[in-house]
Length: 151
Image (cartoon, rainbow, N blue to C red):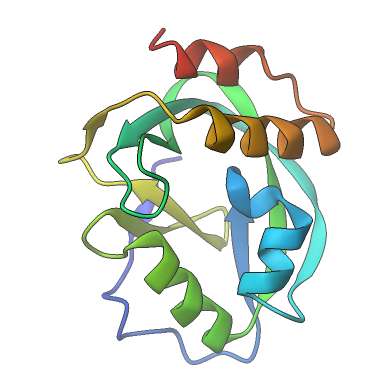
């Protein structure tokens, strides 16, 4: 199921509660609590037909950052319940619409790197943060580590 492009960041849906799929550093509970206080992790889901890759450079992280693309494989994601204000905050952190694009997938928002962003390896500290978050949710880190090596 291909994602549907989102509206611009200024056009946040007018709903009291919105779902968001996290797969990278926003799976880290402390980071998510800091960025979106009061957000609620609803559960962990499997996205079939998606694989991780790293692209950039990220101004915040100084190297490549994680994204997903349609490929053989699967990834685990965290489904969060957000407010519209949380979505505005994430738009800012994720650089939407110039770096990451916010799209709808499986009834939730998700941020994917734009097609104009090239592959770039992550910095070790960013990879360690994401790897730790993946381990915390029970995800197999093999595909993540292969993506970090450019495979």
